[in-house]
Length: 83
Length: 422
Image 1 (cartoon, helix red, strand yellow):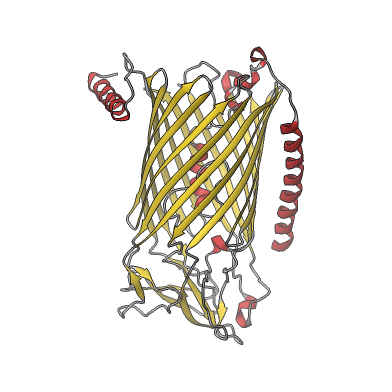
Image 2 (spheres, each protein chain N blue to C red):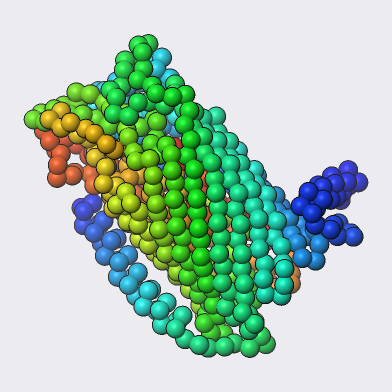
């Protein structure tokens, strides 16, 4: 039961990751220039990468103590994480 | 604002400006303050509370100062690494003066676990030109058995159209661990209480170096994306001094000994992360993916999906799904048999095992729009986290075949944060 559930999570993650990478490659390869007067949506809080206040640091520290992954979008967690 | 508080704020900002060599603003700017609380409980294991406070003030037209503090309080029981057995097991506490027991068929937990952590940090954000800015930070993290101090810097350059930003950053930290009872000798047998314990040092250190490169880009009127690459190199003591590895009889699977774990003295982790946000008519879709690999043979994949449904007055609710997968470190073993001669690195820490993890949650909050005060901004989140381990590994022997060697781990997390001007 666990193996099936776990394998399902893995397959979903891998498939989604592949699709995400393809979309990203296509998106970053584009050259659309948006003039400043059309950046109303882009100025909204939800469209910022660093506008979530303290939430990202809470998440980073929690996962730092429970998983082996490090880095990516920011510097790693702090402390021993010995639990 | 009372006279006393105003005086304190002005003094702090002025002193910081003087210390950093920045001309202070003529009139004191208000502090934009964020406060947050995280409460989590892992069923039958660790529970914790984390309190965070962060404030930012403008020192001049070109510079902002941010000061922060975090307090963690963790209590409960932590897995000690030993494998479950069909009989009760007795372990020596890290101090070497006492013992604790684990019941038959249960994952051994060290109930003496307790940890408090205080982190203090400060950073200066400086704008050098219309398209160039940098930040310089310092922090210290203190626990009764662990200390970490570090500095970091990040630089960001925009293109003239300001639709692409390039960034680079570096961080250095120095950690010192001085565990209860001292540093165990690697792969030495656990000694009974009140006998000479296999110890090598009172304390050891580790240095960590981070490099981070990124690019963020406006992809369309409704879409932004970013790519980041980071590399982390650490050198020094990487083992967990409180973790042990069971040695079992090669035929029966009965536990015959416990060894203190050992890990390599170096580690290099490379990570590539991508994120895209897309504005829909009444919602924002947020997709991020990260892949990491390191020279301990741990590979991880993280997919994070958020969908923010926008409501009136800046309010929103946001379901969240996170899928995580990691492979085992090459020296991870749930246990070894007495027919093996252990050497090099060896760990039974489940954080180095192969497992999958799932996070399901939702947030409700309010985010002020552009130009609005941060007053009234808040975010409330409730999340469920589960790790799916390899409960019945193929290399289990004897009685181990009837036991859950790496049971699933469950946790509930509650977070609240709010912002205001002070």
